Image (tube, rainbow, N blue to C red; front, side, top):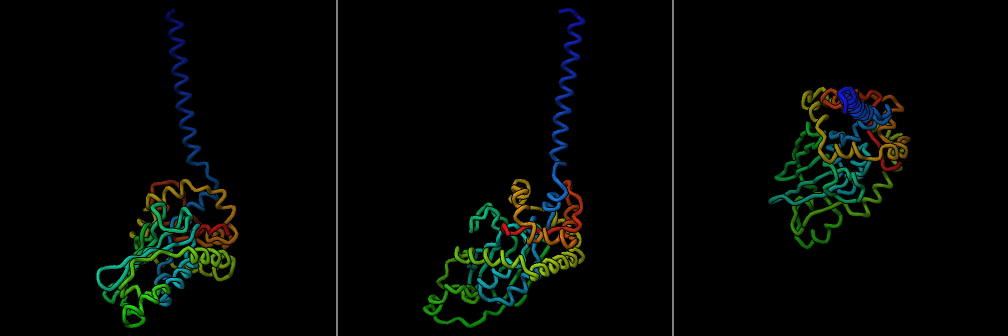
Length: 293
């Protein structure tokens, strides 16, 4: 092969390599910027990321001393795509730990695919509510007095099915708890109906006001928590079929209501400022979707 031909071939190889590299870089850039503004808003929404108004959760627990009443109220407060499901276990002595997860894979039970939102530890006449994931900035405690004194064990065994927290607190003969399937179904039905009411719109406004006060009160801790998604949550935000979720939830979901009512989000602003990822500030933010409502 002549020198001129070798030089031309080398030049072509360099050019092709450049085109390939440019193509890869362009594809990467497009992948990062391909989301529509609406999808970006959904991804930045408080509920999409597992954020919940824990002041209202605390009030709900103090008011409702049965698991079914409390869990129903928590699902009214939460703005995420899926139901919140619960499990609990006994502590040493008198008391229990209650765990709240968003059921991200929608299988009606707690699994490793779900994201922990908060824990509630009730023991030794004391209750402690602690946020998890993006709610990690939050911790509150108060004195806890069971609704009634412990009675003989046979009485309590006959009443465990009612899931009063006072029965859990004494704990004798109790081996743990998961949200029952029938209650999952009833909570799902109730939440769909609730999200089409003015009550849910007001709850979203309350949640936004809570975000604002929490951002001021907790400062750096709030901003760091907002950007610190758990691995399972991060995977969810990346991989969920967004177009389908948004199509079925925009009308009455938290994120849809926030967008329609132009309700700003301190959480989304904190998430944007506290994270190195792209996304931008979520003004007219959205608290997330809601159960195919």
